[in-house]
Length: 149
Image (cartoon, rainbow, N blue to C red; front, side):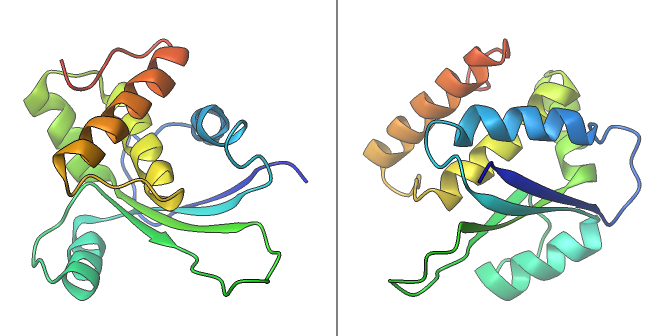
């Protein structure tokens, strides 16, 4: 079964990429790592992201991306990888503030979220370096510059 990305746009923003681009970016992450994955992507407003961040991380502010791994019990052979929420306005604001192309920052946020669903983390320095290297390699394969330079 091929990778399946369900996209829901729960807010309006002229900078939100097309479904085609989201799928291209998701394929770059998942095709060699989990080609049968099913992922739900929800593009959210600041208010919704703030609520999610508060409820799940205890932080009362919006953030750029949150990942929610499916956490299926062992032995359940479903390809569901999990859910990702990306805040449109935060991504656009960060791109401008960091002097990055908005589309490239969107790609980075989806790649970042998908790697979290695959078990990557960045709490410790060693984990962060490994995750950043993986992000850079994936983005490079998409002709997108490193977000860390």
